[in-house]
Length: 216
Image (cartoon, rainbow, N blue to C red; front, side, top):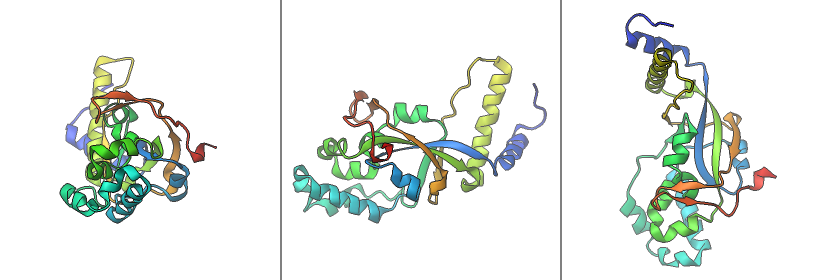
């Protein structure tokens, strides 16, 4: 196997060719009913929706009564709008589960930041750690994202061709989207039985529940 010519030109060609392709991707979350995503899809970060969810969590848990009067102040202290209108998925679940399992253990990173340490115990018991499987049309990703993915694919192909390994390295690659993912793209879900918690020194977290309402 060989590849001749300028590497960048091959990247551009591959990026164009995968535009109409589909990539199996993953998203970590915490929910008591994964069926919501199969019915409504996966939505971009919406601060007003998350604020309403945050308020509900505080109202339903007496341990968080102290947050009732300072919720707005805590939101201002976090003051992070980077993820507003964005949605992230990854091309390989290995790195997500190994290094970013807090999305499955606690749910929304923004809510974790607002509630702080006192809220973590509560969040660890709201819903079930969930890994969504998504067949993402690459046309939903920007041209720059497709080019970056094409570059990683070609480099891995070159490594495989030169070294003839008996395994393929996972592509640690995240994709930032600016639009909701339709329900038709959600193709599966699982509930991991243990996860390393990056917010607790990577100690193993084992959830009490490993099924949700959608599991039947």
